[in-house]
Image 1 (tube, rainbow, N blue to C red):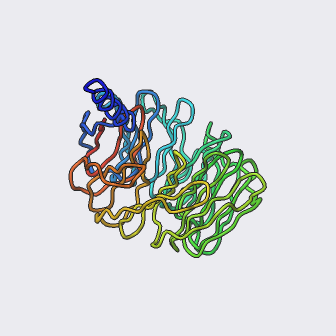
Image 2 (cartoon, rainbow, N blue to C red):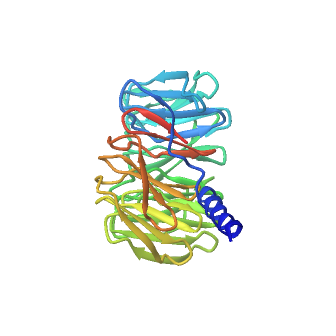
Image 3 (cartoon, rainbow, N blue to C red):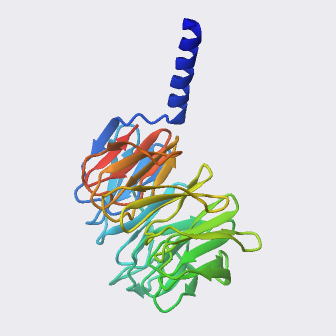
Amino acid sequence: MKRKLFTALLLVLVMAVSASAFGGREKWSFKPDNPVTSGVAVSGNRVFFGTETGKIYALDKNTGRLIWDYKVENTIYGVPSVVGDNVVFATGSGEIICLAMSDGSYKWSAGGIGGQNTQGKAVNDGLSDGTATGGGLVYVSKDDRKVHAFSAKDGRTAWTYMTGDQGVRAAPTYAEGFVFVGEYDGIFSILDAKSGKRVNGGGAGGAVNTPTVSGGNVYFSAWDGSVNAVQIKGVEPLWNVNAGDVVTTQPEVADGKVIVGTGRGSVVALDAKNGGMLWKFETNSGSISAKPVLADGVVFVGGEAGPMIVLDARTGKQVGTIGGGNGIGGNPAYSEGVLYFSNGDFYAYE
C-alpha cells in the first residue's frame, strides 16, 4: 500500500514539473537609461530591446551583461528584427536602422524625419510600431499610410503599398511569401511579399492588430473585439468570434490555443481549431498592449499597471506574479526556459 501511494505521489510530482519548466526565479536584471518602449528579440546569446530615448541594447542573455548599445535620436518601437548577422529596428521618426549584431556597428538606414536614407532621399514619415522581415526584405508601416519594403542588405526601397484613409498603426507580419497587414480602419490585407500587390484580405469592425501566422493559418484580432482565423492557402475563413471586449494585442498562438489581451485587462484563451472559449481571466492591471506569451504550460501576461501575471495555460488560473508592480512595456520573449520582459527595468526570469 505504501509503495502504491509513493508511486502515485511521484506521478503527481512528475506531472507538475513537466507541465511547466518555469520556476519563477529572477535570473538577472538590467537597468537601462530610460523606460523600455520596444519589444524583446532573442537571437543566439543576445537579447535586444530599445528605450524611450532611442538607445538600443544588446545584452548577454545568460548573464545580463551589456555587450553593446547604440543611440539614435527617437524612441524605439516594436520588436527588433534579426536578419542573418544584423539587427533591424524602427524609431518613432520613421527611420529604419540596421546594425551588426556582433558589435552594434552601423550598416544602413532607411527613412527618418529631417534626414536622408542610404539612397540620399529626404523622408519625414513617422511610425507607431516595428518591423517584420522575410524574403530578403524588411517591412514596416508608416504614418504616410503606406507599407514600405526595404532591402535587408542595403536599405534600398523595394516597393510601397498604399493603405486606407486611416493608415496602419500596427506592425505587419511576414510568412510563406506574404505580408499580412492590419489597418486602423478595420481592413485586413494580404500582400505579395515580392511585389507589394494586394492578393486578398478581409476585415473587421475596428482597428486590426498585428496578425500572427501559425500552422498554415493567419490569426488576427481587432478593436471591435473580434478574433479571426483564416487558412492562408485559398484564403479560406475558418472562424470568427468575439472576445467580449476591445482586443488590444497581437494574438499568441501556441499549443492549440489563441490567446489575446483586452483594453479592460482581460486575458482570453480560444481553441485554435474552432474559436471556442476555453477560459477568461481578469488581470485587474489595466489595458494590455504587450502580446501574451504561452510557453512550457503557462501564460505570461501584463497590463499597463503591472505586474507580470503567470497563468496555468490549461485552466487560466493564476499561479504567480513576477517582476514587481510596474506596467509591462513591449512584447516579452521566451527562450530556452527564460522569460525576458521589461517593466521599467529589464528582467530575465527562469
